[in-house]
Image 1 (cartoon, helix red, strand yellow):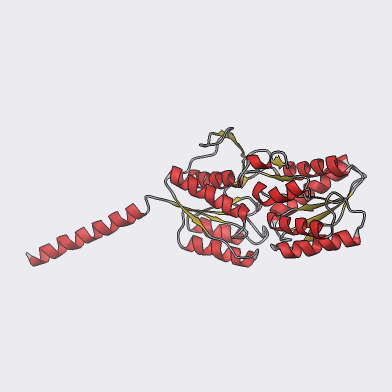
Image 2 (tube, rainbow, N blue to C red):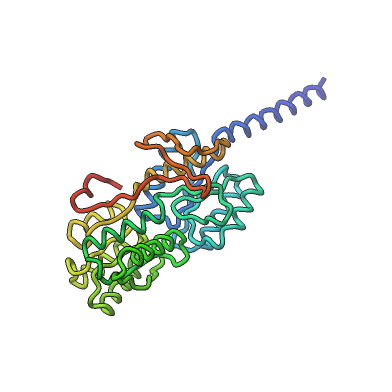
Amino acid sequence: MFSKLKTILAASAVTLALGSSAFAQDKPKVAFVPQLIGIPYFNAMEAGGKRAAEDLGVDFIYSGPVDTNPVDQLQIVQNLIDQGVSAVSVSVLDASAIAPVVEAAKAKGVKLFTSDSDAPDSGRAVYVAQATDEGLGTTIIDEMVKRVGEDAKIGIVSGEATASNLNAWIGFMQKRAKEKYPKLTLLEPQFAGGTAQRAAQIAGDLMTANPDIKGIIAVASSTCPGVAQAIETAGKIGAVVGTGYCSPNTARSYLKSGTFGFSVLWDPAQLGYLTVWAGKQLIDGKPFAAENVVKGFASPVTYDAGSGILLLGPPAVFTADNVDKFDF
């Protein structure tokens, strides 16, 4: 009798354990690993990801490096894979180094994909793109030329030298200048890592070495404040047009003071939302359609099966006239 009771209790314990495990897994986990934590741009992506998680019934994990260190970023991704997170998205810092991590994810059944910055040859499941690289590169050059002319000299201050998204935008800037504005001079890109202080130093040096410079482009959101500070410190407001890929909240005071003529970006909160939505689709095994209806998006989100890119939409241009319509 006692032996039989022990057997029943043991069986019940196993059932409860299995039930608890199944219950714990009812809510899949979708993680996003940014290039850098603690800056407004990725904070907005985090906010969008949290909103999507609530709408879609998943747990959202946000974890990233404290500076733009590719080794630290890859370690965070590997830790998430080891923890068995259902899907992990990465804003890639070093496209050449992530392929082994993608393979490790596949071996554990984890859906690893990219968002905000891609590694197209890594085997990632999908790339959630904020806008096309070509659209971003073309837009910022076209808008700059409107303000400085077709024969101006323009400096470029980027972030991390290995960031594939930043390098792709620069490549299309150079392509646009060569094809449409042959008299335009784009100086060789300078790389500031993830610090505004270093960006300010580089921008200041560019103006000193090139007294005829007419514009400076901050390619990383983290370099926007540094470029603006350098233009202000040099007393070049109006003489040198600053711009960059920075959020309205980051650029607002610079736009209103005239330090920046404009800024180019997209809505990172929507990008964060789309990232988590894509993760849930991958977990559920649902293929992306050519056009996808996503809650809260005014237009369908397009998907290109050939490149594996899920596209948020065209870039937005923010100016002193429209910046107060946005809050991110």
